[in-house]
Length: 425
Ligand code: ACO
Image (tube, rainbow, N blue to C red):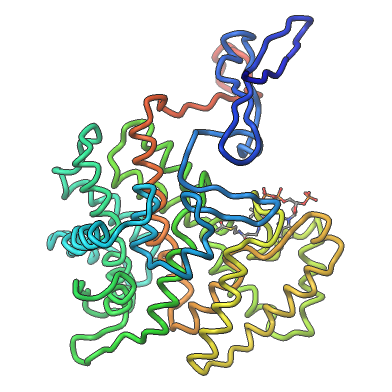
């Protein structure tokens, strides 16, 4: 029997069904709240509100668990590559050999971008942030692929999905090279997804380039760890844009815009800047004090998370990977030592313990990226390449959901009541 919550307002009671997910907290269904009471609920930042039902990703923030379609992310990192993970997130199951081959073939057949799109890059200043280029170019894909814009056609949705997954690394590598004044690269489909991305990023027409397998594995792992994270700000943005029946390329461009912010995907860039600002281990206590000071806007970047009130499982994998990659590449980075010491001091500090602030995925990823010679401005771009898989999986799930409606939050209005027009003298 469905449990019910009773809400009593001015002596009148209404019953609200309590819905049960397969895991995690139960959810009070307030869809009839306004109809039955004339009232809205108020929840800025959605701290207590489930905006949709989803079967893709599950996070237990208290235990520090992240599951993609039921599989712990660590198991996927150990046993899969990124395209396995992409298939899993989109289709719900790990692909078999022939499904994987078919999926890979389809993705590699879409890696190039329309030749005319290449000229769009010339419109950007060379010192543009590559995320600015990503927002523009990915949105512009809508102008080139008219045969995958019909969102009611399942086949067209699938083509758009594959196009987005396939073209994101190409566009990201083009943005990177454009900002460096280098020729825009072309993909090479014989390579794996991660290898192809690295080749497009770093190879030059004048020199031969061999992808370092350690680097390719590290990038692939980063892609898996960033592939989806249920209803975060950028995914919710994609869903909200999609709920108005906007085309998939426009929806993903909106996700990229939301991801750019330093409170979300931009944090890894901010972590590295913070570690450089700290500079030496002896300065750490000073920055910890700044982070704790209510009157100082400084926050410990890469720390804290809306959902994780425990160690972010992705940060744990990233921390281990960081040590491995630096060791394998023979790199000594003093920033890693600062990060380890900063983490240690913060995790023993009552402020961080009380507020349950732990390192998140961004805390160590910047150090790995630096070891792979990827500049900070590209960190969020790489995040967006990986997260595109989550965005399209969530968008597809939403499009197939019969309960889907346009997203239209209400508000608590605090402005003027109606008043008569009067120009100030
Ligand atoms: N440093 C210092 N204090 C912090 C930090 C931090 N990094 N994060 C949260 N707090 C404090 C807040 O000041 C607040 O204190 P109060 O209760 O005394 O007011 C309390 O902890 C709760 O913080 P909120 O901002 O209310 O928590 P919220 O869930 O809204 O924010 C967020 C989560 C945005 C991630 C926040 O922890 C933060 O700004 N972290 C730094 C940026 C960052 O690393 N972002 C990456 C997130 S992971 C991702 O997007 C991939």
